[in-house]
Amino acid sequence: MKFHIDNHFFIRTVLIFFTFCITNSCSISYSFRTASIDYELTKTLSIAHFINQAPLVYPPLEQRFNEEMKDMFTRNTRLQIINQNADMEIEGEIVGYELTPMAVQEDAFASETKLTMTVRMRFRNNKIDAPEMQETITAFRTFSSNTVFDTVQDQLINELIKEVVDQIFNATMANW
Image 1: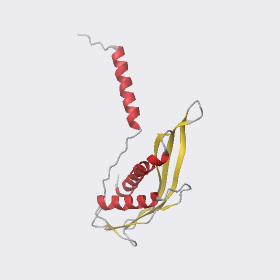
Image 2 (image 1 turned 180 degrees about the vertical axis):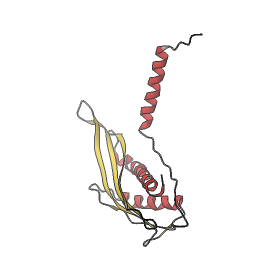
Image 3 (image 1 turned 30 degrees about the vertical axis):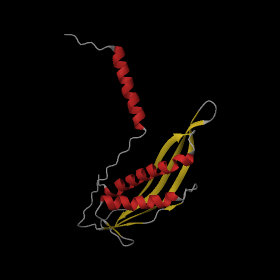
């Protein structure tokens, strides 16, 4: 018995599959939130206030970011949050918050705009002999340039904050 695949059906199926993958790849976000903490050794965490040093300042960004940082670690670990002399310490600053025109069309106008948030973070585990970890974490979202930025800014910064905080949590608490 011979098995025959219709070439047109196969090509259409492959194209649909790749189209689905491409359109969904823009919004895939991985969040593990699996803490690998030895609670016998490590009991406290200090999260310093991240100051907004970005050239473009959106006043609610700093407060929302700092609240989400503390909420994330409180919800997902048993560590006690204290102000100083903690077993683990996280500090940093928001260093970037910017809009960039994207996908310039033939009429020289951008069809999309990218909002990018960048945070510089430092992590120290005072209970083990390990160097301080430093990372710069960036997240972005795009939106239609036909959209008034003020109408989507709060939603976008909430998404960016969540993504950056997830990355900080995974970088500091997950032992891979």
